[in-house]
Length: 82
Image (cartoon, rainbow, N blue to C red; front, side, top):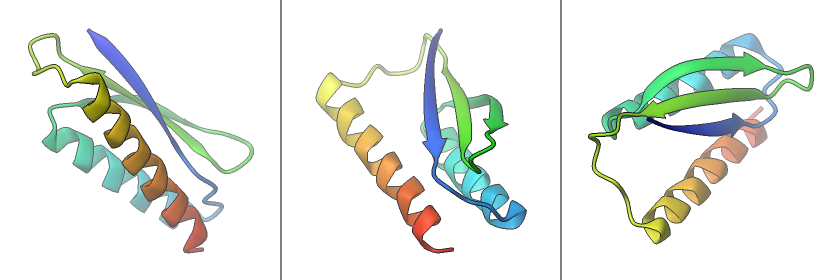
């Protein structure tokens, strides 16, 4: 299995943090990823750990990099909306 982490940017309010985690988890679930666990840091960020099943279609490296950048932009936008 392959694992991937995504950091949800600064979200000091619990409801906003929950919305950001849920949104990211649902987006990844549509791609066949499973949220394994997450941790909220003292700096009001969250680290989400996803598992990609071995039988899932493997992405090309360029596609994976573009998706990572999109996720980071989404996480930053959630942090800016506070």
